[in-house]
Structures are given as structure tokens and as C-alpha cells.
Length: 115
Image (cartoon, rainbow, N blue to C red; front, side):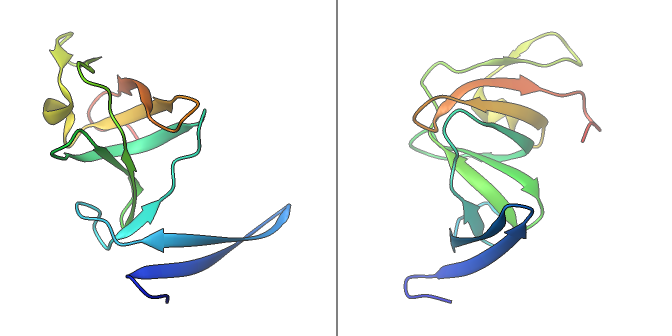
């Protein structure tokens, strides 16, 4: 562990070992916040839409991303075909595309029950 509620984690993969610092994060079950990778996609459940516009997406219990979200963001609910605001996306499985700065570019909501 590190000062300021950070935790250093070593991830072993086929290309070697990478060290990553995880920070405490509200709305993530056990508090591990992952850094957004610009230009990537994040898959998980929308856990919260925080004041200030951050969308919290958790790919697995205990881990999550706090992602900057543009004003006016909406996504179509595949179950009802209606547009949902970030606050209405909470609890829904989603695929989130990130732009070149690591902010939310688009959200694709998945049918309820999708992984």
C-alpha cells in the first residue's frame, strides 16, 4: 500500500509485469479505481453518475473506472428503444468507448442480463 489510499498492484501478463497504482474510489465496491486508457473500450456495469459528470463503470466487483463524461451524453436502451441520460444508465451493463483523452466518447447500453 502507499500513502493517500493508493495500492500498488503488479499485473503479470504474456508481455511481462506491469505495476499499476489503484486509488480509492467512491461507488466502486471495494475501492479500486483503474486509470482510463485513451482510445480503448470499457465493458462493465454503470455504477454511478457523479456530481460533476463522472461516469463510474465497474467491469468486475471491486474495480472501476471514473470517466469524464461530456454534457448531453445519451444512449439508447436496447430493451425499450428510449434514450437514457447518464443518471438513468446506473445499474445497466454497457460498452463505453473512450476518446483520445480517456473521456467518454459514446456509450452502448447492453440488454439487461448481458455480460
